[in-house]
Amino acid sequence: MHRYLRHLLGVFLVGVLGCVGVPAQEGVSWADAAYRSYRFSLENVMHLAFFSGTESSEAEGRWERLPLLVERVRASEGLRWPRSPETVEPVALAWAAIAYVGWMRQIEEGCQRTLLTPSVWRSIALVLGDLAAQALQVAEEDLKDAQRGLYGQEWAAQIAMLHALSGFALGVADSELYGGGLSGIAARARADALFESILRENAPPWPAELRLQALWVEALAWYALVGSHALEAVRVLHRVSAQLEGATSDRLSVRASLLSALLVAHRLTGEGRYVARAERLWSELKNAWERAHELSVTELGDLAGAFNAVIRVLRLEEAKSEYARFFSFWGERLQIDDGEGSLGRAPVFVTKVAYDRERKLWSVLD
Image (cartoon, rainbow, N blue to C red):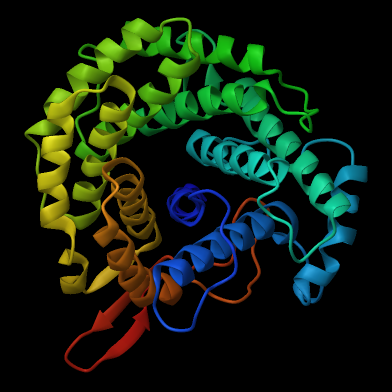
């Protein structure tokens, strides 16, 4: 599931540069691509929260049926998440919590005023906040090693959980709609404990894989905004970012992740050297997607996140038109109209697509 959620976050970030209005015109334009990104992300989170695991007949006419499904979830008792380590991973729960809190705040701030009534959107925001809290609670109770203070064995899980706990603490701190069972203060305390455990268990404190190092920088930046060990987090962030400055990769999505991480580091610390390397990565990255033959949903999210970082931090107008072309070509090939799935898996994206440039044929690989 985390593959779908990472994609959701990447597209969500590009689509929501402030509230996005209706498409201004037909054809490939920045406004059109941003709006469609926003809608794809919204539809994905709605499927994940309310339609996954339902009968296919219930998913038909999904927007018309959504108010009924929302009330059904609100009226139900108990958790909406599986509680077995064999059926759910910490990474998946973390990305779900990040996505749900992000959309809860978007709804609360009034960015979504169409399709449904304000009271239904309010109910949706309440449910999303509660589902985020439940996801983090399941991870804490069922998937955390109490002795080591870590969530499972993988670096990816620790990174995602630190990001999720920090983002959750910030997201619910001043929310008027949130009423879940996990407070922002408790989430921050868990983030503090996890950060301490990571530093205690790992020396030096970063993973070997470049993409994970990039995600580690993003998680550290979130934690530095809310955690009790913010200064230490920034010191670690500088150490990891220094490693990334000289890093490179043949993989398009890894270069995109490096670019995003360096701009996140710059935005938090103000260090100009991170911008210089990010600008070089952007010059390598732009147009490079046109040579790709395959793209997975995770890679799409990584690339969308990089476009977002360039647009928001570097403020390059050319990135908007480039994103419009990129999303029009790849994004809509990974999006499908409907589907069925078990609880916890959003059924609106295929996993990987390929394009035969000589024959001009598309195919779904997974």
